[in-house]
Amino acid sequence: MMGQKNKAIKDAALIAVCAAILFVQQYALSFLPNVQATVLLLVIYTKMLGFKKSVFIIVIHVIVYNILAPFGPVLPLHLVSMTFGYLLIPLLLSTLFKRVNSVLGLALFGFFHGFLYGWSFIPITLFVLDIPFFEYFLLDLPYEFIMAISSFLTIFWLYDPLMRLFKDQLNHYYGTKQLP
Image (cartoon, rainbow, N blue to C red; front, side, top):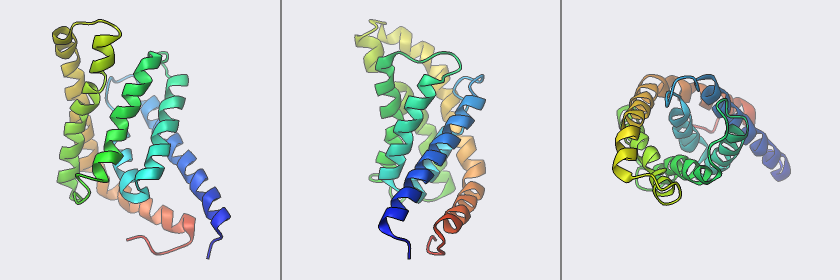
């Protein structure tokens, strides 16, 4: 059995690796607006690692991505919106949608999250940047739809194979066969 200190070190390393994977895939696809596998990976991380570790992964990812963003960092105030938008995934999957485990159910969750994520930027955009709601909403809607479709398709096509791979890797990493 692994000691508590050893497990904490392994957990920290796992969180760092997961955040790095999240960063690399989003960075690699950054030339395509809102096309990414971020939602897929966050769904997998939440289902396998739980709420707490997923929150750490998201915070690290948002900070690092915005420091190294290919098109420059977002406005500092948008860091709050971006963090909140991604935190909705572990929050909702650990509470309201805890029992959703089917690929189709998770893909639909990813689809609707694409809009929720876009809407998380509205308050700061309206009140701080003083951009009119209707114009902002209409201009952002196509990008929200792209993120929704991207999230749906990546979850629908890749969730099962990546989940199996991630389970196998976690079992190997922790030296157990306890993961379902």
